[in-house]
Image (cartoon, rainbow, N blue to C red; front, side, top):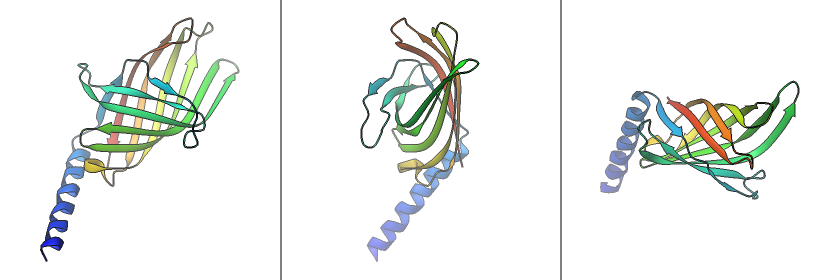
Length: 160
């Protein structure tokens, strides 16, 4: 009986925490540093990267790991790269899993890109267990001659 009661109490606590997270408005974070890129793996056939998430004031919120499933690149009439993948945002209270599409539109000399992101929340852990919702993002990326990125991106995750 104690075990059942304990499980029930933990379930209520998790559900309440997730509901509070969803009612608090969007989670807003910024990416302003180049990610740590990684090579393709079985899980991430196109590789990916891990970026630091920060508040608008620059405080660290956690990490955002992009596992790329596919990438396409076209240059008609302008050069656009689209990345399809799974984003895992890790916060102190748990993780949020998001299926994403990122689109980068480059200028003629590839020194600058406008970045757009969208995605659907596919679940989570901890305070975000059972979450649904969506992600929106945008910003700019300056590129060095060796293509080192210098992002200035803002993302919003809306949880339900």
